[in-house]
Length: 128
Image 1 (cartoon, rainbow, N blue to C red):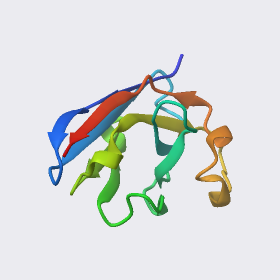
Image 2 (cartoon, rainbow, N blue to C red):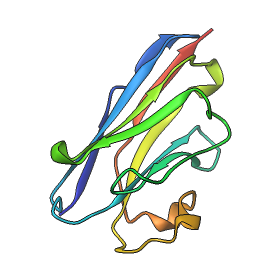
Image 3 (spheres, rainbow, N blue to C red):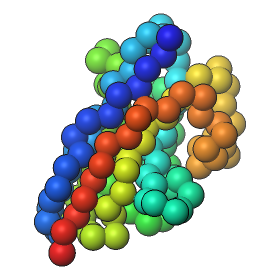
């Protein structure tokens, strides 16, 4: 069974940085794309970033573009989200998700339904 586990969240002050990690276990011989999303209470889960299996295709959502970098280390079955210059409005639960389709259309990168497995989320809180 595939599991994704996020870590690295926490409480920081505005302007500081955090690096989130997402470790994938259970089906690590398959290729998969990774997406990062975030959610605050009462809102829909919002797309943050995407990286393809080989890392050649990367996309960012508009809300954090320019302040984040997504990366991955397939040897460690781990994906990362480096977040800089954090703002109070970035406070949310951050989720990673995996798309195991063999030839995923890149146009799906922001679609929640494209991802079949999700982590439990890690809380990020940014104080002003």
